[in-house]
Image (cartoon, rainbow, N blue to C red; front, side, top):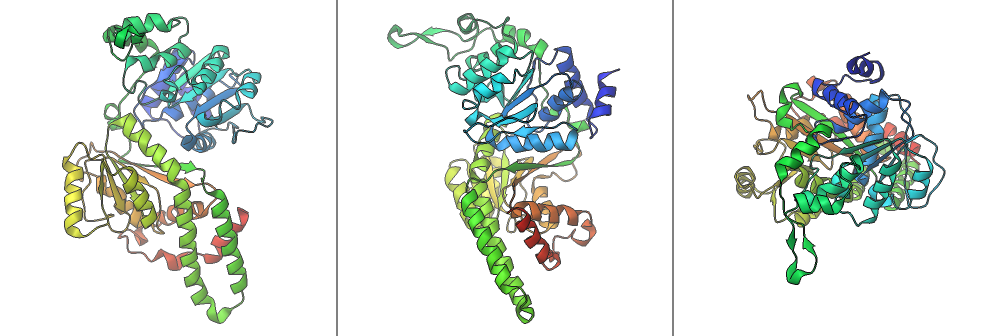
Length: 459
């Protein structure tokens, strides 16, 4: 049976042709390869495709950045029938699944438990995180790779700056071919004596064409421009993340539910209570957004480093705006201001290569401006209507250019009001004719009691 036929039998969602070719490439290399595809091309799905057609290759360890582990879990649940477990915290406990997902920050604490599993597959997502030989997480990944018959490294930028960073990955995927760091460094890193002859400087590059020829049999790399014809015009990708302020959020939610319980039964004041309730829900949404900022900034940093592209980030609350402006002030244009200043910032974002980010307001910058220097948006926060998000997404859409493809990432905090708001947006998108102009007063259609039930289920 062909790889395509096997995938159709065990993957729930149809894969694009280039993604099937990626799985064939993994199969050709016996599950020991590098997927270097551009961001948003589908590296995760290709790795899952290979796992799905090889149920005998268990247990599996998936290592990724903290902001990506719940995305892996959701992708597994959406596209396959495989069971998985996300590991959290630095204190270990019994592992209950043969597919485990954990982040780089805690892998050192879990090393013994992971080695005891005798994993058959190691997937290192965003493998540029292990570019430095001496750090602990790289050493743990290397120890796991030594005992795994199948090792897949995924990264849109396998080399961030120089060939020396590529060695740890090459050593894990092809340990026999790339066994000696010194041979590799002396051949491919343009070695120079360091200052006063103290050691060697391996920050250069040499014999790069030869290195490419050596690596190409086990590394597949497609840029988004290479597969544009197969991509849909617009893709929405949900990024589930964990809160960094969980205790503060839960306390605020508790107070909100107590307030609601105290108002229940006051029929005469019901309308006023619900109006006040939406204000309080806004406070919960703000806390959820604040709790996503660590993950959001990590994701933005990765995007800027990995792609070299521009990015439009949408938010709502002033505190989120201010945090983003402070972090990216040297490379950001900022919206949400008066028409003259905003026009200047839009022009700078469109024309200045050094201006990498546009920080916009969903309301103020979601329409009537053009941000087509980017093809990717990230929503750190959300309103109540699909129309306002659709319009904001379309700021990066070059109308009339069929070759243009846009990707909209939506960051959702797990076990928070975010999940309910996103469910409302998706439900209303099914009746998009009612909100296509972006003027729907969806707040009046929101079932306030349903929100309460949702929050209570998360207690």
